[in-house]
Length: 151
Image 1 (spheres, helix red, strand yellow):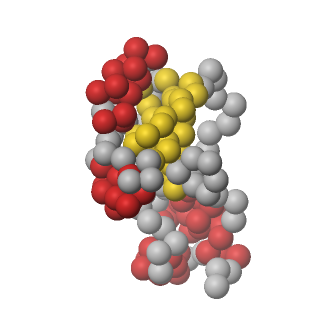
Image 2 (cartoon, rainbow, N blue to C red):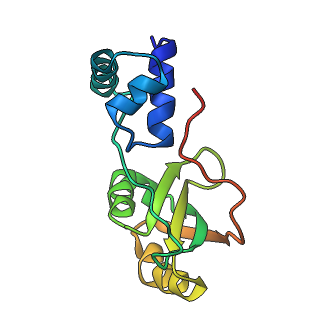
């Protein structure tokens, strides 16, 4: 069970993973040793998966986001494990979820522009075995983006 200090530490780290243990301990009125032990425990217990840098997609030429709703054929559904492995290998797919409902998967894809997505769609995504239908929607602008979970 997380206590008040664990939650404060997690909030600090998800806002800025580059914070040092000293900075986090000072922000939360903890000793550096106690803060370090808490962070180690949170990592060991799986509350912290990893610490990363969030990159600027626009600066990297990947400023277009496409949401692909993917439906597998009846035959394709027998190969869900292979589909999952195939989609995980695609670096342009930055998120993918298995869905309940009409579509089987929802994938978030980053590309340079609509033409880049067209090439990715025809050359890669649509060629995954078992895929029967892909409905794509392109984002016009980003209203909200965060990786911070409400704690």
